[in-house]
Length: 604
Image (cartoon, rainbow, N blue to C red; front, side):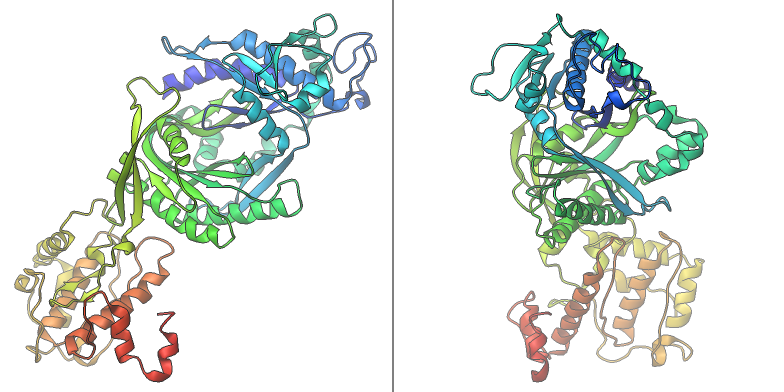
């Protein structure tokens, strides 16, 4: 990570300094290695320090161009100096070189502050900034027509400064875009433009001081802010395994209108709530052609989990439901792998970001995702737990440059939620007792084996056989007798036709009551609960009904579904409900539903 950070800094430090010298600012370091650079249109003739001998463009005895042409001129001049300074710069990476493709445009933009939801690791509401406008879209299109080391201007930028620069070869079929060769040095040069830009630059007087540092907490990840406070920012850079989600929301309202920012705010807050509920990080928001792109990262400190891949996919399932209610048709791509997570930029301008193959893979996957669809790579499919099923679709050739030794193709997988498998909970046709945690880990398990029932029963027998364990001692005081591992040997249980034993008179299992099992995670609560249910069914002639909510957020409906399914299972056992097959819950419910409540069947 230290070497990668050094290589980035070798490239980015001079770039940032050049941009700053021309009164520009890097608003966003993109995950694909690109930058969004902003040159404000400022009327320097109103500056108190203005000297008529030095016009804003820096060329003596030439008339002032105006704020917008001057800003465009500064942008193109910075491109020329960047090209001269950084073209194919060796970044200490052996034979690997860095090339630049630059697109320039101009026009009105709007900077939005979005969000306001409090992350789980902090008490400060998190805000994100987004810059939008047609100028950004035109600049992105112009960059597509620029070769390595070239600069291309959109028609808007060209009209502002066409008399100040020299055009290169025309672009076939693209009359609205123009290659930049150099400045018209008989009139303007980039050193004089830079001198005037520096002369009238008063930004240092409006920068935050140390006393205003706390204001920036709203825009900085809490773990990074702590490093800033402790002056240990050099330790934030690392190579770690993360899961990245690219959430694309196309065809939104015009962001330059009154309604567009309101829609963007509603989308951002909903994405934040879902992301933070699964303990992920909303790394950045980007404006794309007519829409927004959210970059969610799972596995960044301090919220690191062994099941981050599962959390990433589950968040996509939830976002499909949440965003579609806003009449938005999102698309999602998930990729997992090792990436650089750290500071990108220089001491003057830096940003915490993620760079690497998982980001490039997610970008490529996103191009293949259908509306309301979710796709993931092979590594994500391997690391997801039993809560997610994945199906192989095809192999995809990756475009662009990859790290040495990195794969040139990826396997595309379709993730599906476990609920799509229609698993039963409760008593089944064959007298098997299916507990909710057989198909949905509730104890923090990462890997769910093929035979999860056998694993759960083996863990139960091992734990509850510890005669000195306070948990089983307390439970057996309520149940009576000693722990009998024989009742947990088989998946099928022998339900008692008549009570074999009676519970102690002071027990909630004697005449009814409530038993609460509480304690830290991982200390046997689930095993104890399963033992109690099996013991009551086999010894006390009790029939189980389940309703659980697992550790994942947004699972309130699971309890209702399990209550219905397990109730139907009891009705099957009692012979009250008759169905042609086990999965036909609707037929069973219609059989027992009172006539005056039949209107509730569609909801059930």
